[in-house]
Image 1: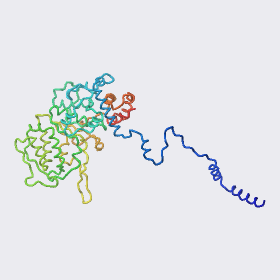
Image 2: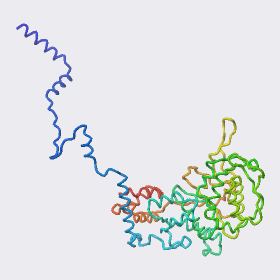
Image 3: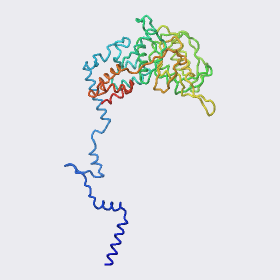
Image 4: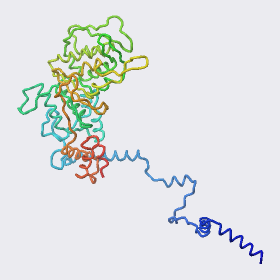
Length: 452
């Protein structure tokens, strides 16, 4: 009896000294029921833990996104081909035609505003061999049609230069004053580059001689450069040679009929740190055509910069055909280049664009020649001041983003091109996209496929 009481007292003291959480844990482990796995449907075996064959058999079919997008693209292509047989689809909700019937940009009138003009991609590449704007290419690729919206800003710009050449075509005395020098400015993705390209396309179709530069930034970035000791400016012979080559792609036939008016010798420069041997000038004989002059600058890179600068002076004296200078990314000529001049053995300073011989010859607008430059926000130059050097104060024209009426036509066009599903399209939805993008054409085009 005494032994039993001693044992009971020992175990009872241990139980009292144990912490409460230990007691709960022990009880929970003793009383917890085992968890049964969920019942599987009939006819289906449970997956083994490490059986890759069974896991592969359970994978979701059609998980290849590349084949899915190819099927969707093929379906859209077939649907668009069938839609061409339905003329009622080319009519907007208010009964106006979606596409203009005008055969050319020259025959467009104010009645054709807010309609789409159909281009031929082969014709565009032939008339604009220097290259198409990136915004125009993206619009063609995503809409699957080579058509652009006719905006009032383009009609006004075209009529402005038409009156500059032929003042007799002014039929309205209230028409704005003619500007021979124009700078296209405006917010991001408002259509400045596309408007300029359409103007060049129209002018060349009219028989004008157009010096078109689709990328002014190229003049100030990359390539060999050196300081000309005779002029104090920096020469870029590689860019000059390529610029002359692009200019000849469309204008060769026109230049063959134009004689050189300036017979002074063209100075030669360096090329890849190689100074030309012998004479430092290229003679210009009487009867030399502008085509011969440009060809000489292309063949001899030592003469490329001098020929390009001389070409600018020669084009100012052409009177038999209208001459237009069209410069895209014009704002890049008012800031610094990526070229640097050594100051000391360990320091250098950037070279401004106005210090380049080519930019210095083509940038000024204080003359009587027809010239239009378009600012580009894609090159991240930044905001320039209102008064620019060598540019008339009243030269700027601000292009707006899409208005509500223009956005309505654009929405109908994207629906017509099946960029959005018919069941998801509504006036409320496209207005949401318009106000969300603030009329930005690029953002509207990107947002429309996500309409639900």
